[in-house]
Length: 142
Image (cartoon, rainbow, N blue to C red):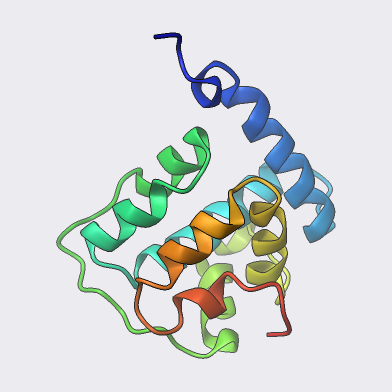
């Protein structure tokens, strides 16, 4: 069996995602974009059990999957989904002095991510997660 395309092209797919996210976020650099994406993932991940998080990660492209699960502290308690303003503040708290996340970061990253996932499968997994998960990854108003 040949190596799956998602692994053969993992770097290219990730770079295209970063470029799309950078455009939605209106960031000047890849580093700003990476920090914002990482923060959006971490804020979401805090609200999932490990089993839920792994199911979610299965729907992500390979490098984003790795970013989502990297350094997961399994001893941390799971948080409840909160209002978007509170979660946006949480996004901005990661590396606060080097974080350029706009208040709309969650929605902007969601827009970029939805360009790179199978939306039907992604939504099906979100429907199995706690209340608030599907809203987190919607592209609508915050």
